Figure 1 (cartoon, rainbow, N blue to C red):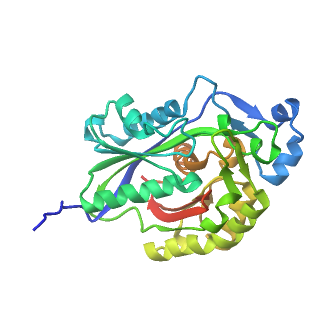
Figure 2: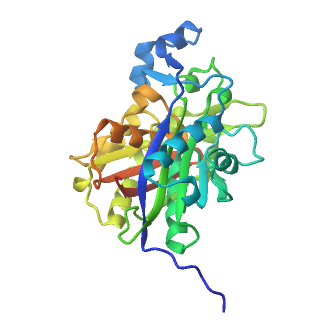
Length: 320
């Protein structure tokens, strides 16, 4: 008979960390570069005022290491305690080797399990659920989960449908076991029929998207997913202290939040000053909310990631 490892009843997040490049690009900066747009147009369409763009010599791995290091330092654990590293990204410069093993090495984490997750903008929620399940199954004890993106090399900086939206950054969380679960069940899925609505056509192409189609999908299909995540976690929306959706578009964020009807929740609107950082957006927004004191330790928050694939995932977590 094959023996199985003993797991834990649940998982909890010990700490978040985030990192943004220093280089700020405003809407006026984009217009000055010759993009057919202006500050008022961008604010009205997507709600973005400015975004961070990494310099050429600052890689996605650099962003991931910086955010992961901050989360690890805040967690109270050491590199020796981490036995699994998961990096969620869709902007790796190469597919081989993966990002996670290099991130682990650079943080001094010795011989952990290491793999990447590509669920685009839903990547962090997918990776967090995978980390929670690994801990519950006994496959890991302490997991570093990182969402990191350097979108700038994948963007056509003359295409206003993408260049005004996407940005660079990273967010991370350290996840450990808990007798009382603090990471709720995931509700996830995909709509592959519409995978071509956000895509990179081939190795020589930039990111493209059908913004109107994605907007219609996000504002009609996702609030039931958010509500189901609350139901499965046994949390009424009125109990939520925070709602942290993927930072795709301010109108999408507010549209989902209105249908969620969580009157006491602080709504993350990191998009305004950070842009759309895909898999990094949720952990980065949470880290910044905690840093500002917008939420308190122990309070419930709902996260939902969604984007290319089309993929989505939602779960309720307890703020560390």
